[in-house]
Length: 195
Image (cartoon, rainbow, N blue to C red; front, side, top):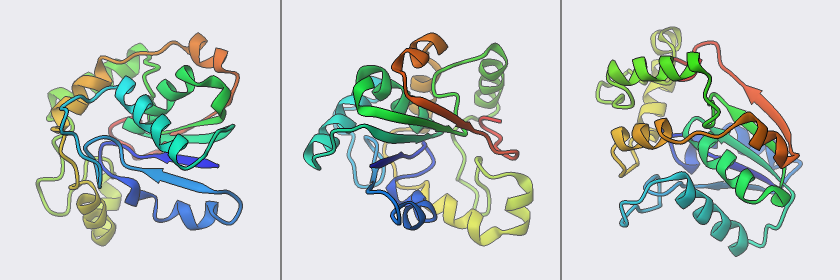
């Protein structure tokens, strides 16, 4: 099974391009992190530990034991790494897409701090702009930009809270290596949040 964990700019729906392709070979699970998409955040509790608990409950409900191919994009990278650390026997492959996943380097930490100081995760207020898409995409594909903006509008946790949680959550390379899962890291040339 492939488990796709979205970032703060989305929900289960952002995987519309990946699911059809992956579903040709795998059972695919997309889920809404607490407070995103169809999920609520009534408790007000947003954390890596809460995401681990939520994902574990979802996997148990659908009968997915493992080993899983776990994919985390942006904020979802933190949740995926935390899940892999908590349940290493359930994870075969860990893919981090456009995310440090809590494995901070000094350069990435400084970049993210500067991003937060410049307005951070509060993107999406202006039609035709999206913080995760590069200027070229925003200029040349306004339809895609608008789609991403709309997909990112279905959430209840304030983006500043997401920024606080991910900024304060850190994992070590050694801990991730100890999971024993295959690890792949994907980075986009035009990702302004996590280049």
